[in-house]
Image (cartoon, rainbow, N blue to C red; front, top):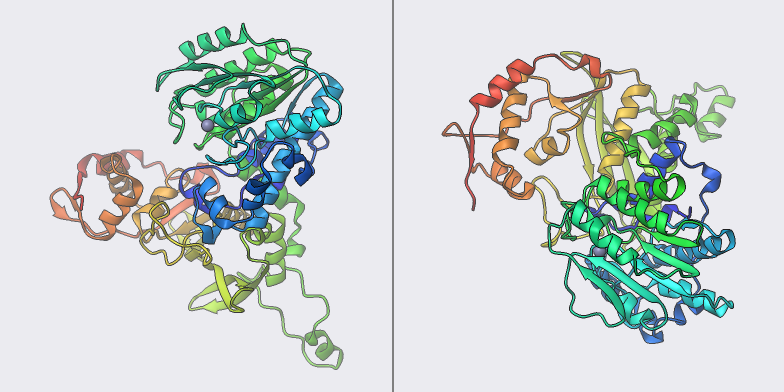
Length: 560
Ligand SMILES: [Zn+2]
């Protein structure tokens, strides 16, 4: 298997659109924890060379990829947010990964999986649909240049037709596709287009038909698209996770003992990573075992990192400072400031580095970042501050105010305030401002939530608590946290129920702007305490009260 940390695109704006950019990392985390894979089996790619790209792509087009305007169109994000160098690094690594997987597959006469790739909308002189360069065509051209002369087949099972691959490879390889969209005729492609909403059974029937025409090629590329799942934001098909696994199993059987390269292609929903993990299980083990629905890849990976970080590392003293000199001269040595009496600024910085948050911030263009600790009223504050090299000014990226607080049910890590800001980015129609936001987010909410849980664990507290100032904050936490007060939890569940037809942005704005009524009377948001218990056994057993309050509460939301 081929993967790399930089397979996560440095584009938080995509995450706002529902695209899970952590797909490769999540799949890897599951496969490692399920012992379906060991670290030593994961190969790191080299970035593909511009010489290799130049065998397929037009020179002027390749040059244009260094322009923010061109990349911003291909990846549907604002120019200000693009760190061009980092984007090109991700794309070149993915492309090099497809080439490495192809070389490995040919050498071992076996299937190989590259966890990012299948950029099938990239043509010789154009990109689009999250595809800047065509990794499959580039890999084929590089193999040809090195003397490989066998037949190549590309079985494209992404939910969209392979327009770019047809442009690059028609006439040079067998191209087959099953999709749920009509891009018009694609000469040179054996295409099956299924109606929107097609489910498992008719899809698999179409697959058998296409597989019956698949040639026994010397090398086969399989685009095992994750956007075939029902509910995908961009794909129109409606497969289940089991259906997608069955797809991969049938293809794997058809390609048994032959070199094949598997690529995840598209996938724009929260479960796309499970399709990728499933592809690995199908080709590696012919396994039908589903990924457990409640598996949280981030929690599992962070828990492993936490184990490798001893308490002393997080509360470590600075090495040799002016204070040490002062102490040597007989003065009393002041203790370094510690957040919650535990974490030093150095220790927090080390942790943020190890959990991958600082590397992510560097990829977003914040190269010089450090942690500062301060008192903030009754609470304590940690800030992640970046120096903006363009303006020379410093900007706060993360601000966290916490304290220990006893509530009903235990003592909690109480988060008074948490802001995560990406000042280089801008709000837009596609990335609108949520109530309470003064800059777009960093795409690190899941990581930060997990870190707070781990902090509460290390400090031997009962969990994490906070007061959601806005409806969308409570909504985002609803799967892991609940309001302590059962009546309040019931009203919240009723509000979720009664606003489910509305996009979250509209619902949270309606609540914030007082356009909501509860049982006919004006409703004001109640920012009561929400808690996430570390031990599920501590969750109060008050479902009857919650349900009673929920059934008695009826919200009406006025649209603008
Ligand atoms: Zn697609």
